[in-house]
Image: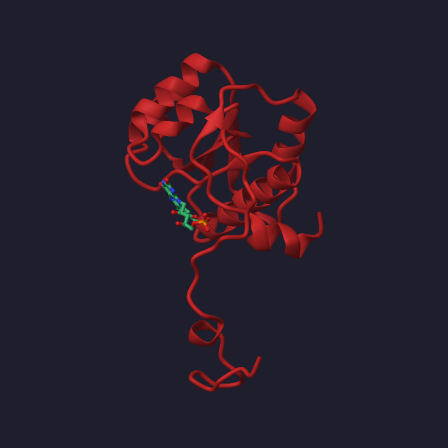
Length: 169
Ligand SMILES: Cc1cc2nc3c(=O)[nH]c(=O)nc-3n(C[C@H](O)[C@H](O)[C@H](O)COP(=O)(O)O)c2cc1C
């Protein structure tokens, strides 16, 4: 899949077949996170791969905005060290993992930022770090055509040269 095609079609998917994902694919998704660029190359992140059904169910109960973690094939909890740029750095790493998974036919979504304190404790994340998000990954429950995005019109958010000047399409 070409990069733009992945960006164009990827969707937030919130239900999964309770099926495990091949270890090599899990590893590839995690590697995509690890390889991501970060400010000053600080790499202020830790990726906790959660694969046991018991743990996935427990996280689904704790994450207020992501009960569907319970059904995932696996999930990645993304913990950040407290640097000025850790949210933007980890956000990029998360997008790398989501797009890599999408190319492999695996859907996902970002769960966070709220209500993750219990999950952080459950996962043993040190107090000085934040649990930014949990990303459940899985095979889609239904056929996912992708690309049906609700986005603001191009002309509302893209400007040419100066704010407010129309970028002709
Ligand atoms: C930073 C961020 C945080 C998000 N947090 C949640 C969340 O906690 N729970 C959830 O169900 N979806 C969450 N989402 C998914 C968004 O709601 C979803 O991507 C958005 O509505 C657009 O839908 P689409 O990705 O299918 O086009 C989050 C997405 C982002 C980028």
